[in-house]
Length: 401
Ligand code: HSE
Image (cartoon, rainbow, N blue to C red; front, side, top):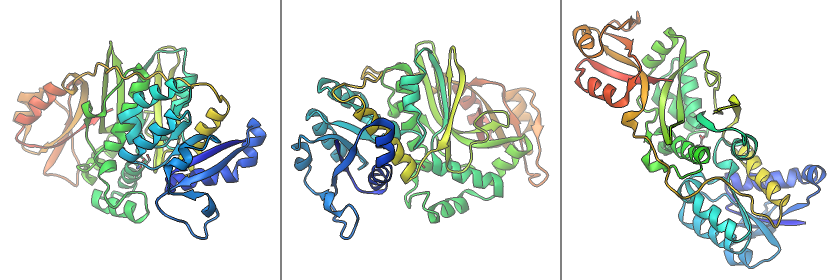
């Protein structure tokens, strides 16, 4: 029997306890391994809860118990979660986590500590919720050079953008609805400003190149400036707007960023709607492979944590390696990345548009006679930013995927 401890009995932690309980016999039947939760570490008590008797408040009880071989870190945050994860690994206990903030900031260090103590640090649930994307990148697409990863990596913002697209609703309206539905937090900044997607594309980029891609060095733009008029242009062009994390190898550099993008109907991520996530991986031999599924939520995320628990349980006494070193990856400056843009301008801007961007074809909306839009050629972000700064009639711009 393998005994497990759960750090943090919040949404994901309680989901982990539920998955291991409800699917205990299924896991036993499929793997021959009997997995049981021995401790749940939390500051709170849970009187009357089914797992009340497993709740403890002292991390030392877990660290000093040789029976506990696997810890699930579902606390979130960086400080205490780092301390507890480190102590567990140093005691030779594997750690499986959903904590993308901690993984992004300390992944290579914690993987190295796991290696030194012959145990594992696994983080499937940190990206894509229940979608098995990390295991696929690390253990399945192993005969390829991965050349790019593009993803809809945040369920909350995808739900909001889908609603704006389908209902013509405005940003503030859908944010309130997402909060009322419990998808968006009361403080939605991490999701709507793109930080959550940024951390996830940083993790995926690191796994793509084997070195550390720091989130702090990424250009990250959220969805707070997207309006219902942007969606009117998108619809007229047969496109939608998605918050994309994009990462590409350009020579030995990683070009990664997060921003809202116009996505054409034929793009594989066009049909990824609502709270779902989609991740498109391009390998030099494989071509494209797309991973789609529940990108957030208690049970999908817990399912991914538990799949890591099973993976560790199936290879007890071995370190499960991960191609992610602490060496900083060479990251391409956003200025040098190239993109095409849709630019909205005041209706009387033709002369300056022509002077700055040359001959362009305009897209007009009957309902918005005071403005029009045009698409640029593919140009560098720097070249575009310089021209756009001079465009006095500019209203807004959005990248095209
Ligand atoms: N806030 C995240 C999302 C949760 O909406 O995708 C899953 O990481």
